[in-house]
Length: 150
Image 1 (cartoon, rainbow, N blue to C red):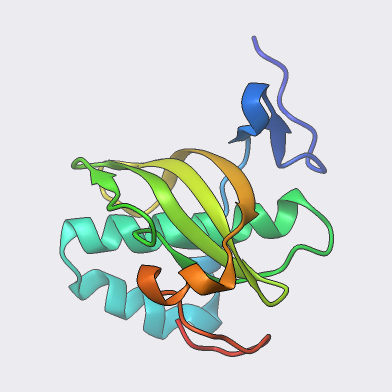
Image 2 (tube, rainbow, N blue to C red):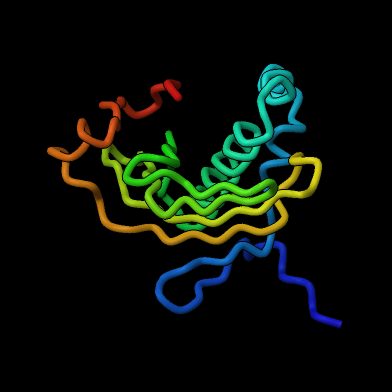
């Protein structure tokens, strides 16, 4: 039997800067009573939209736990390239994440359970900041820290 990961570790770095998650958080976030409205909205979405939202939530949570002081405020899965979707997984090689006043390149792969309620696997690579001059052409909004805008 494989030893279970220690609770303090949420992800392990692998080659090429890719981080592979060992724990998943989107379901717990959605189970929080404060997120009842979000759960209700998710239930009305198409499968592709639901998959994208649960994977975006997972991306935010993984990045928060990955590096102390890195606080993501927004994720755009289709910023630099459209994600490749299947029934239960997505590969977002051209995503972007907003943190500390900057948009950063982000690539992630995410697979969900058959009911699209939980994440089954997740890995990401955080890249360099995207130059401000490229924000508009990639539909990346100007945000203010703490701005609740999605």
